[in-house]
Length: 398
Image (cartoon, rainbow, N blue to C red):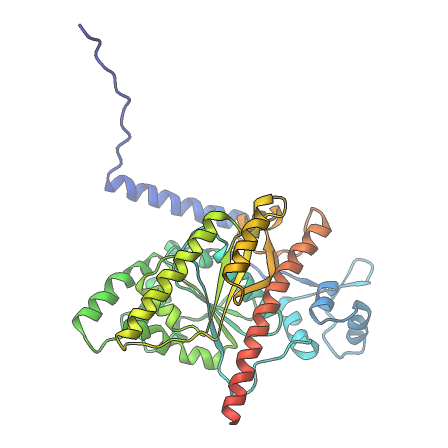
């Protein structure tokens, strides 16, 4: 006789079980968000120190204090022994607009739409998207942050739990369905002064069912132009519209690329990420080329900027992959890099970016290096924006 084989019990999960898991996960995330953001139920903007504000205005702190004492700019709030000042985010942005070194959008020119895209997960797309939006707002720009990723990580980072707090009517879906003509209805003020948010939710998965069906049934319909048309009022209202795109070459992703004037591509200097980037450009270019040959579209980006993200300074292979990237994308690669640090990881784990932090318990040097790295990336993006506006001004003048 052979011994009867005893199999381990199976952990079968049916649809009802999946629903229970989803409900539990949503409730847990809500509680986690509330615990991390306590005592406030929503994210609140950070206070800006006088030292940091002086850096944002490219001046010495003594000069900033002098302007405060003379009433040229708001005095902020004195702290401690009265020698340091703290400013609200709104005050800081107003001061930067008043005396800062950054150029504003020229009068009469439209805002610029910039998408942040990469088809590979884990490259830092969401943190880059939100940090660039925050950084540009700290330069005095008005920003609309558009989340088109159905996973809604940007929406979560901005302090919302998508399933529980974002309805389909709050997203881009009414424009996708043709119920709305533009996206102004969806832009809502966020916790961060200077940034309005168009949130996302898993409802956006529906776009990749609706758009191809609509295209097949209506030969005059152009799915790739849906978002572009709806962006026009946003271009008039905001200096910059930044889109967090879906992580796949979906119908909604293609529509977002078509609506964009520029593109940011976060790319970690890792072998697999580099290999994935070559596929990104191949799929991207072949799809646009096929549509051009079909005389459906023609498309130009005013700039594409590859940003090295999650850079590990202590890993020897990093420099080798950097060399590959520089050789492959010399005209696209920016010079500023975003390092991978525990500071950034810990901030992200608390629904924050580095710009959300008022202080850091660890090394001040580590904090300064990280904030300087992000500032450098944002500064490069701003140069691209200013170049776009300058060329548009010249074209209009001609």
